[in-house]
Image (tube, rainbow, N blue to C red):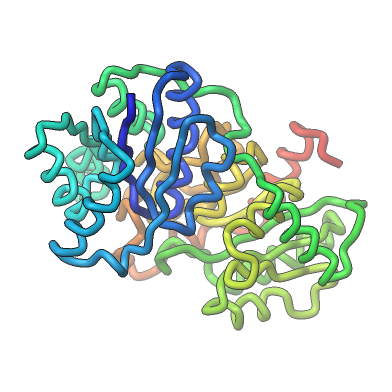
Length: 350
């Protein structure tokens, strides 16, 4: 049986599809899965048996005509017995309508929008733990007739190119054999309200260096280069990992070598968790109860403060109606340091 699976974006959500696909192909080895997603996300699915990734550029398939052209190209890889829509967006809706006309069964994800709205409303907030996005993915497969449970990680496999890109990067910055703690820090996110204030990031990096004499790797894009330089300024053995230069493959190769990752509620945290590495994720305006906690991490993977206004957003694309950004201002760099010590004691890394 050939299944068409659709998930276009965002990066973290696409990456979190990996444990679900591994669970399905492990239990149903005769199934072939064709995954339709963005082209730059294909490294997440390296070496997963019976999963064939169609990576495409969304900009080339805009509007109704673009959806039709995409359908015609994808259909060449069919026929598909069932379609699994794990995105539930306008584009995926239009795309799957064509299959419904063809009488191909379509199964769509329930994102739990009403429950999430109840979490973020100002009055009568109902904050209960919702299913993780990986569970929601598997629920769609179950509806399609393929129940399965997640397997032990790591879930993302690192390909040869990733290792080569990472080794070349380490050589370029003069870093060789690991002789101390290697800490990744991703201080940015897709939305500003999910980010820690810059002065706290600067203080954290200096404190990590003083406390652990660690090598610190700062993750960010070229748009964040100036802020990364401010965080790095004057800190010995602190390096910038630019996703624009290394690409996703190179970043994954670097992450594989790290001992832990500190970051916001962002894709870097989710990728590191899928590599089965310890993470410390700072949650402010968003909340792990919305279904986007670091996958398969215990409570040490989340750092947050309890406030009656939290969460005020599911994705971070809002403004702080309190005007004081207390959810992030109340998390101190010393709290992160304490959490690092817990992780070191539990994992005996160094």
